[in-house]
Length: 126
Figure 1: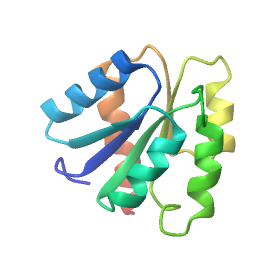
Figure 2 (figure 1 turned 120 degrees about the horizontal axis):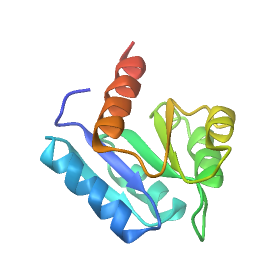
Figure 3 (figure 1 turned 90 degrees about the vertical axis):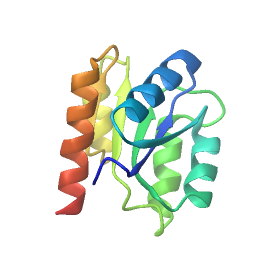
Figure 4 (figure 1 turned 90 degrees about the horizontal axis):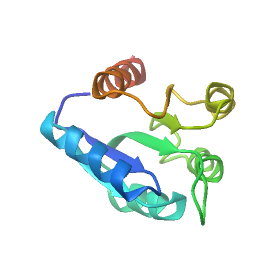
């Protein structure tokens, strides 16, 4: 994945979502955001250029687990790698059960996030 690839940030916390988008834009990525799983699925369906998803687990309307189930059920979306971003204590186990490419516990550093994106996108391309 090159730096011009699109990353979708799905998180209900406005400040976190916008901070991540700003970080990604500053690092050369194209980024868009969604406030919950339903909005995230909509964005995936109208933006076929999304190459990676950053996904919060705890959101109203449609949480990260339900989002991931819907994503995996759609053959056109199933192959897009997901990085779980969560404050939950058992986030790693949950991320693994969802088939996530990587997971980070909130709060995380910019370096951790960018490293996870590069690692997950590299393994997706392999």
